[in-house]
Image 1 (cartoon, helix red, strand yellow):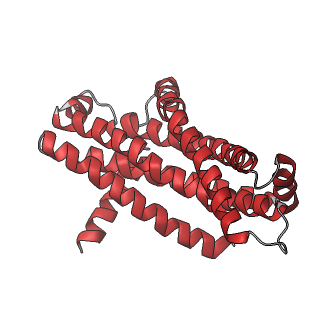
Image 2 (cartoon, one colour; image 1 turned 120 degrees about the vertical axis):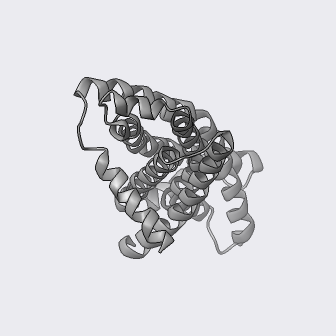
Length: 245
């Protein structure tokens, strides 16, 4: 019953964002600001994770497939497909759940406990739409872009690791990556990215919006946002893989 109570309140929270909408310019200005915070602000950590992710995966795949019967381009093929289908969208979004999700939940939670949200309601402003909707839209737009960058940099990391270790040349890596590339794999990766982006931002906004108490409760809401987002990402990963692959 506790689960259904929270789930119902979450659905009503999403529904409430679209009631009494503000002027489009208000949403546009706040959305552009959030796109900068979420996208540009997360670019550095995404790039570092993607490069080392591709490099480590290349070394581990090479370790497992060292055999005269296995051609070197197969390594590039496996690393490229793994990065596109699973590593880039899932691992990156789990990290973003910690960085972006905790920031959003703590920001909105602080607004709640300091009565800033109550002040917006008194002024007749739809607080859920004014605060949460720009963050969700910005996340759904920017996080898939970060995933595309992550896929590219994962392959760059794989090329660098292969060349530095002498396992395979860049030409061999690219030959394998090109040979196994399927447009549907990229489409599947983007579907996961959009889904995860909505989960991260909406769950974080919900947890922050319904914070009650003081500073301790803000920390609790931030922790819940990260944990719930991570669990839902893994669950959605399984469901999408079962349905689309």
